[in-house]
Image (tube, rainbow, N blue to C red):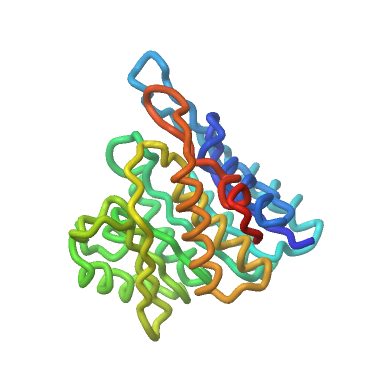
Length: 272
């Protein structure tokens, strides 16, 4: 059985973060492991505002030592890393253990929070994690920050940002346009760039608020696909279909958000 690792924050509601990653790994038939970097809770008395409590970087490091004591995972992903010290710890572990199939999901903000989560993280991600990334999966906001281009409004903007981010060392860049990108069509568009060619991944736009965890799940699905031996483009294409099914079959959690359903692709009779 292939092993997959997520280094990410914990979402108490179970919809995003490492919980979404582990559910996705399971759906793909891989054995999921985790190192917790932060704990996110929501204040039911303050319009569902987010509170983020970071785990001490030394503790993150000990978790990684524990995971790698069982050998290298077949693929790993990062999500919310908390602060620049944790980013450095993760890079140290990568340099020490030399894992393959590294997927960097450069989480710079929580959905439901204003502004960037620890904006200095962007510099550390550029310098320490993108150079070792097999794949990185920024959304439009994150891609604009990492590329220093700001708001990305056109496909040409996205292509330029992907080229810049690829220049930091990531072998493949997938910029998630999704529902945020006003491309004048009723579709969700993600742009794939591997340094040689662009691929434009489209799916019908799902008009729903039940999309909590979609970004984490997309990166986790790519990670599991790579662990299972898929090519990068095949892993990304399948991940896109997996997430589309999950969003289409999402359910409300409460009045503030709704979760995607990680079992939807399997429920439709597909195998991974």
